[in-house]
Amino acid sequence: MVERDIRLVEMTGGALHFAHLSTTEAIDAVRKAKAAGLPITCDTAPPYFALNELAVGDYRTFAKLSPPLRTEKDRQSVIAGLIDGTIDVIASDHLPEDEESKRLPFAEAAFGGTGLETLLPVTLELVHNKQMDLLAAMALITDKPAKLMGLRAGRLAAGEAADLIVFDPAAGWKVTEDRLHSKSKNSPFDGRPVQGQVMRTVVDGRSVFEREN
Image 1 (cartoon, rainbow, N blue to C red):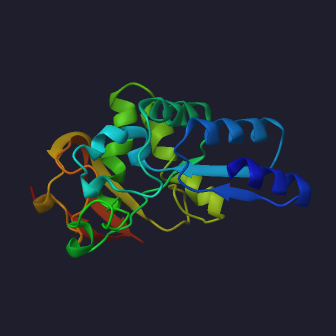
Image 2: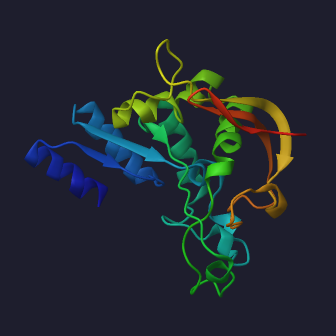
């Protein structure tokens, strides 16, 4: 499908963005298209560079995502695509579902999981694992998405809105139901130890969140 759409870009002269790439073949196709100068961009999401198909285990519905989790080879390809710039940005893929939709037999359970609250710490795994430096990893979830969307956001600059977070990249915690603020608790990272915690959130210069502990 990715290769087909790339051919359509060649035929029409349009621009195209692929969401949530997760396979070696798709990433290779985009890499070749970019090398050919085609106006193509793409993103991936934390589950596809931090988890593989084994996370489904005994049919864990929290790990039932769309697209599905792939092989370890695919996971490594996603990381390589982030490192070499083939993949432009990281999206949260925040798709919460109510408990009743996830606590069903695997075939009947809904696709998706919460992603917003784990976006920062799981992205920071690329830094802690020495695969990317901190500024490069943070650009994938701040400045680069804003530029891709043509937004005056994602960076600190004089005269711009003071939208920022203060975070501790080394603060460790475990992804559990009681640590998530979202009403939906179906995280594919449930039970995973992570590092990186938001201490304060500022929107347009106003503090809207401050961690108490």
